[in-house]
Image 1 (cartoon, one colour):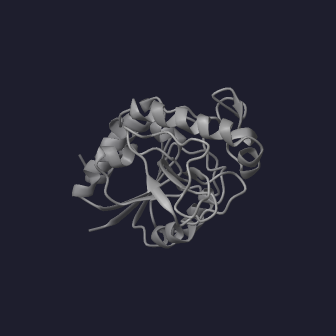
Image 2: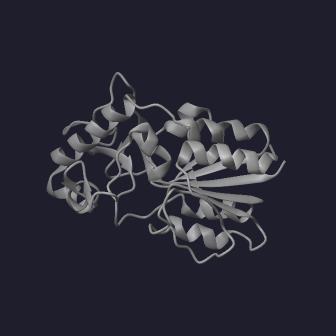
Image 3: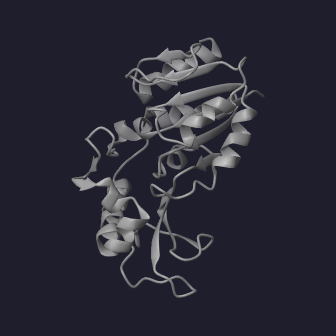
Length: 229
């Protein structure tokens, strides 16, 4: 079974109603990204940051996978699929995909602000993190999200998986955010690369098959191309 590796970004979940900040001049729901997505922002105003992610979590609970998510899950019938996602939502999981690497963390988890290995799943019933919520070692809980300026702990595993790809697919990412954008450099030269995005995306590879569609329609076309339908 061929190994299909898929790198997904914000455009993957846009049809599901998940807001992005890169399309709104560095603002995310009227907040400066530096204030809500950096360690410095959390240190300066932890209550603001916690409330911001509480709102993101509540929004996520109302969202559903789109046709792109479900289409990727269906491809597991035909390929050994690994999804490497820059998204912090859980829509790939909800759609039924079974092997997912979250580069930037997971919104539905909390973790210790002192010990990154202490991670606690959140639920629909208890999805908020409050100031004063502590881990077992007594440190404040924070979102299990990789903020700007922090290391990306899963990037080495993502690079290892990418090197094994027989087919590589990019969906809904600008390829401007590193280290994720650097994964393309780990794809062997003879491996076919498909890009699904309605916009032009500039990379250093010139043999990419660009499907200029959104996630749902793009994955449908990808499936037809891969399966010869």
